[in-house]
Amino acid sequence: MTHEFKEDIVCVRVTPPHVGQFGLDVYAAPQNASNKGVVAHVCKYLLNCTFVASPVDIPSSNGSPTSPVNPGDQSGGGGGSPRSPSISGPSSTTASAAIVPGPRSTFAELGLKTITHHDPFVQKFGKGASSLVIEIGHPETVRLGGRLTRAPGVQEELKVVEKTKGRKTKFTIALPGEGTYSFGVFAAQKNDVHSTNVYNYVIEHRDEDPKKKRK
Image 1 (cartoon, rainbow, N blue to C red):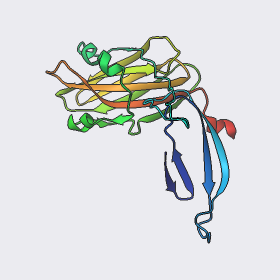
Image 2 (cartoon, helix red, strand yellow; image 1 turned 120 degrees about the vertical axis):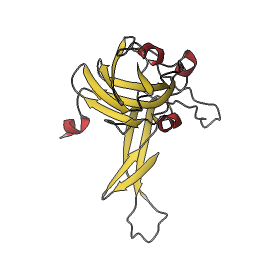
Image 3 (cartoon, rainbow, N blue to C red; image 1 turned 60 degrees about the horizontal axis):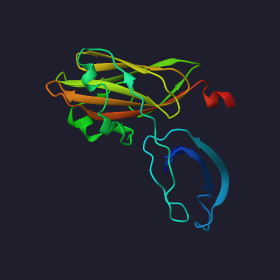
């Protein structure tokens, strides 16, 4: 868990270890308090986590590990250039590995850059099916592919259409409904048949913005 201050607002980012319910307790104390070691409990949040990109085992109080639920592994359809199928998704070994949000080390090594979405955590609001467009910049010697997966429990075809023009590739991602998705970007040199995972997005698609709902 990390936090940062933006003027008079505290932003807290929580990374649950696996799917489940978690409690977030917030404590505070005045800056001019005489006893810095005394804080007061000011509020509590109940977090319902339905998807975790990188589940881990956390030892319980008796020393035995918990049992996180691993994300699903449905493959998305490909589109775009005739070469796309060769890099539209990872190998079976890579697919079973935990997904790490954000850029991998090879992202910078291959000269790639984000054009539309610089934050790996994306929120999309809208009733029913929706679409999202993500653009990645790259050298002309590098080709890209994309793979979309969804949280466990949903069996359906997930489509990604990719279109490369010059030094950028545009991914049009079809989100069939409300839920949590993972979109992986894969890259390879044009003369290389093997691709590697270079960037991962976590996409939260909700029918309504909960902030607007509270107003």
